Image (cartoon, rainbow, N blue to C red; front, top):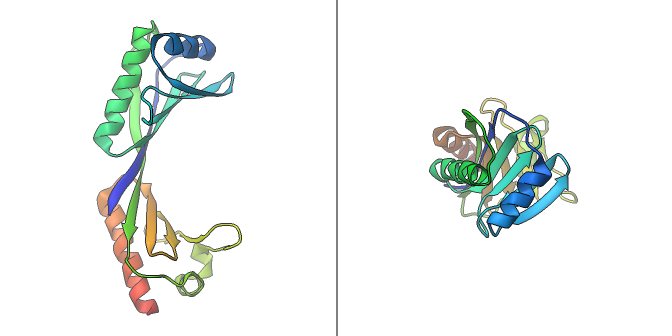
Amino acid sequence: MHVVSTMGSGELGREIDLSEVIDALSAEFDIETNTHSDSMATIRLVDGGPALTLYRTGTFQIRGTSSRESLFEAKEDLLSALREIGVEFDEVSFRQNNSVYLTDFEAEIRLEALAIHLGLENVEYEPEQFPGVIYRPPELGTVMLVFASGKSIISGTISRAEAEKSESHLRDQLQQLN
């Protein structure tokens, strides 16, 4: 099992003029920008780097880093860039909200049988809408996407131990199914 993405959010503690900030960042750095509205924009300071979503309210989200360390480095890169263009702020709150783990059970999985085995009250399975089983084990608090290829995505936690517990639980369920 390995982390494929992390996500965190923070607050600058003040509102920002989003269009001015984006214009200044674009002039100073070679950034990729996707403006969603006058109150929200997503940028990448580095080509292929993490997605940094800025809100007019001064809140921000960072997605797409491969570890907790790189998530906090991306936060520092964002704050440095904002300081460089003259955005003033005091203490910034920031926390990691989620990690996405990928695991491979290395066996084909019969999704219909799995959905029934896991209990339809804990599962969403609509193959014409999504090619996997969405499993929310009530005792674990994570969400698992299980695919016929044997691969599974585990999210809803930042704890590797909790993700490993989820992986072990699903492995046990798959063994009972066979």
